[in-house]
Image 1 (cartoon, rainbow, N blue to C red):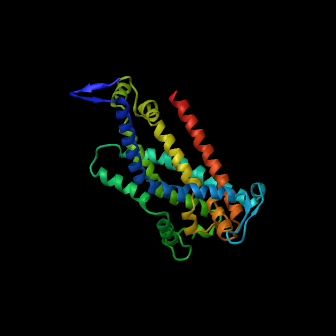
Image 2: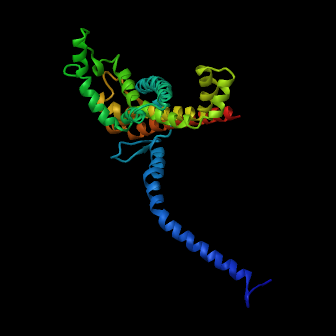
Amino acid sequence: MASVVGTFTVDPRARAAAAKRRNRGEARTAWAFVSPSVLIILGLSVVPVLWSLLLSFQASDLVSPSRWVGLANYRTLAADPLFREAVGHTVVYTALYVPLSVVGGLAIALLLDRKIRLIGLYRTLVFVPFVVSAAAQGVLFSFVLDPEFGAANSLLHQLGLPAQGFFSDPSQALYLLVAISLWSGTGFCVIVYLAGLQSVEPELVEAARIDGAGRSGVLRHVVLPSLTPVTIFLVLFQAINALQVFDLVFVTTKGGPLGATTVIVYFIWEKAFKSFTAGYSAAAAYALAVFLLMIGIALQVYQRRVRR
């Protein structure tokens, strides 16, 4: 049925066809703008991921022709004591770094969530270490913690304390890496928690105070429950960063001394570019990826249960 507009009759089918042509034209224009980004994403992320997955089932040195070995790389990985040591070091690093950075970030955020003089400066000083690259941090602390010429041992000498091995001591090196990471990574937690504290309902805080709750009661029953989504995000974010730590290790210790700081990602790099066993390295990388996926799923399930 045709509709009449003024003195002209418009066919609905013609109008629909014109709309389809217009939509197709808009779609072509949109794809013309989006296609460069899509090609970059495919070329730099999706294709390497699929290629490394295939590589994990092969014996390859990235130079000579590869050979299909199936699950042999994964079976060798499960029995490799060096890989187990790297996993252990990574777990220790993560178990220390994640809770200390999150709890420390919350404590500092609570201290900075007030209106005092120069509060903006204090917040900036806390956040500045986070924007310093891990390579720069590694170079800085390598000089400071040098066993022979570093400022740290010089200070200990002035205090009458014995000199320390620091990065050359297998019993200290991993914990020093945790401390350096806390110096830089806690600032991110502080900023995120400060943003989360702004969303806490003042009415809930006031009601809790009227009911007789003190500072600890307000913190426990009002502030912390309101910050649960923020805490889950930070735990996930910091855990992923901790499990993927590499650049700080590469700059400072290179996995030493005696393999005391060899973490999973450094193990992957070492097998790929020093031992030239790229297939074995890819298998280790996918083992790490599966573990990260499991952590993400577990935290998402926990967050849903908390919301319910």
